[in-house]
Length: 406
Image (cartoon, rainbow, N blue to C red):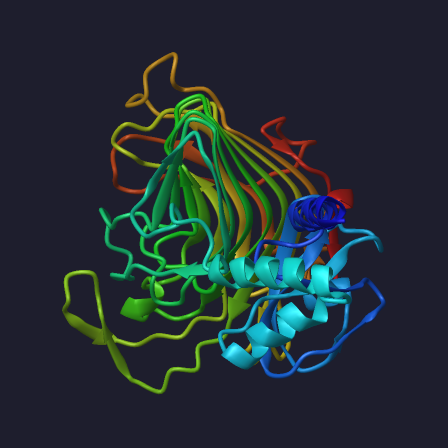
């Protein structure tokens, strides 16, 4: 009899472990599939997903599991909402007791719930300043925060990846985004990353010949020049690496109206300057225009972009709050020698942009979709050629049919 109980307990543990790997992140408890009701008290980080892929939102009180509550995603109705473990002992007890239905199951569920709560901070490798080399790290919804020193060059990355590393399920804290998340060598992957606030940029590719893949992620950028917000808003993604690619699937960019009441801030050198509030940010992605070691042949492959413009409380504002989707170098001056003067390419599909407007000329739009530049190594700015479409240049692999307004 004891042997049967032990076998049953082991089977229960195996089943629970299987679900944890596919239906919800470690330390979370499933509550309902899309369309179902979830009951909870207080404010929690909630996940939506399946098959080891998740997006996150912070919710308060009871809710109906719905895709619209989360960053842009492509999950179908079989996806699950799950609630993150609470930090109070009473909530931990509730998690454990809700899984139990018999004395053996109760014992198994209690041990699983306890370990889940203990691991809710995510992998021990998920720390500020880490360089992940060929590993797959699940942060379990953990928040990493470094600093934000205006838009100063040379800031440290919050965390770096190389040689096939994957980072998933992490928040980058407001005021702590620094140089973002860097890809240093080989291929790198981000899954379900939320930048609560972009500093210098959200992510940068510095891996020659490497692909930086970003899935199901969201980033917010505050529209002012405050030191702690990264100075004047510029870009979300930067690609500086020769013959490289940024592969983006299902990304939401949120432009946030500044609500600061201060009249002054400081620049990268620490000098006091007037605080300026803006109505738009710069770009979703820019390949380097004037780096001292600038090289071309970079590709942005983006399918599934949502651009929003709102107040800090989430109220919709007019316009996209953004100037450009992609800025690329389509030709080069004499400072960039062959074989490095290869045109960049932007492949853009399924762009959903708040209050997008295509002008009557059928060519220009607000925001601009694919903006082209002359690449240089002068480190003194690059010449702009203007907005282009696929009918103008194969470097801009996008048509007006690829863009919709909402």
